[in-house]
Length: 194
Image (cartoon, one colour):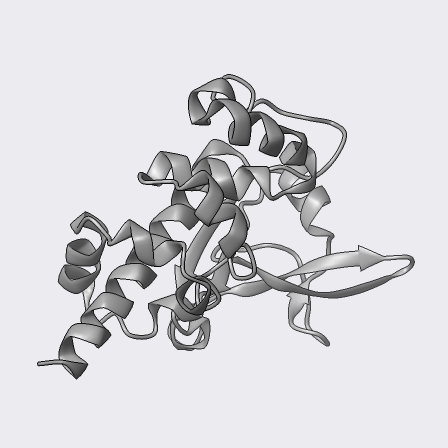
């Protein structure tokens, strides 16, 4: 199981909760995992203050790693109520197709031409675009261009052994972050003109 929790600044939470950083085994040494932590007891190396077993082996033994991720997109979110408002506000989808706006967005920067061509106008469609730009699902782009999102919905979330792909949950979560960013950009623009 993989749990990711996004923070504008993960250091703030790590400063206040007891945790042990996860470890990754590379060849014959262990290094600190970039984002994973254990918030419960796990064997650890007191010299490095990291877990003493690789995170994959730890999972096999029943330990539960959580990835605390820095997501800069949240830096202008004031509080939980503001976040809920941003998530529940229908974005100006046309902004998504503009290069200047698209290049500011999480995971889709550099893809404004594809977004302008496909014109996603819902979180699920945006999640599908996010999935299609991963190696395991790139082959679906021409199908979507020619036949629309409905033509790929049965295959977009199916597991592939060939290459990296997005699970449905990741696609929806990342699409939601993009909606928050679009709405923050709209707030900023409206404040500049008011």
